[in-house]
View 1 (cartoon, rainbow, N blue to C red):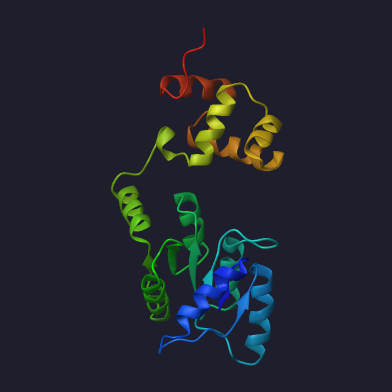
View 2: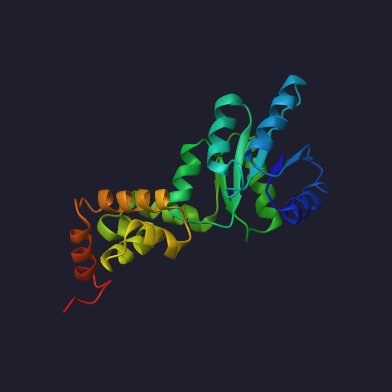
Length: 212
C-alpha cells in the first residue's frame, strides 16, 4: 500500500513497483486516516498488505500517528517511511512508532524496492545518511545546543530575541500551541528554567551577539 497525499508521487511509485516481479501495489491512500479505513476493510477480507510505504506529513492524520496505529492494530504489516524530511526528531518518532524503514524521497527506485523487500523479511532498512547520524548519536549522544532539532534551534534564537510564543508562532507559521511546545522542549533539553537563561545560552554559544 502506498500512502501519500500527492497523487503524482503515488502514481510514480506505483508505476515503478508494478513492473517488478516480486511485488504488487494492492491499495493507495491519501492520508493516515484513509489508510486505516482501507486496512480495516482489507483485514475483514484477509487481504492485508505485507508492507506500507508511508509519508510523514499528511492532512487529517500524519504518518507518525498512522504508523503507531498500524503497528498496534496490524503487527504483521510492516511500515516503511518515505518522506522529504530527515531530521532526527522525525526519525526517532517514526522508529518509535514501529516503522521498519526510513527513506528520503531523493532515494532511487531500486533503494525503495530494497527497503520494501527488507521490511517484508522483518528487517530494518534506513537511508544511508539517516543511518550514519543514528550511529553518530549512539557513539556520541548530543548534548546542550547540539541536542536541539533545527526547529528548536530556531525557537531558541527567537526566544533569545525576546519574542513571545505568539510571535514565534507567527514567524514560523505554526500554531501558538506548537510554538509553546517547542519552547518547552528547548528549555528541557538545555536544562533551563527561564527564557532569560535561554538568551544567555544563545549568546554564550555564539548564536547571538551579546546585548549592549
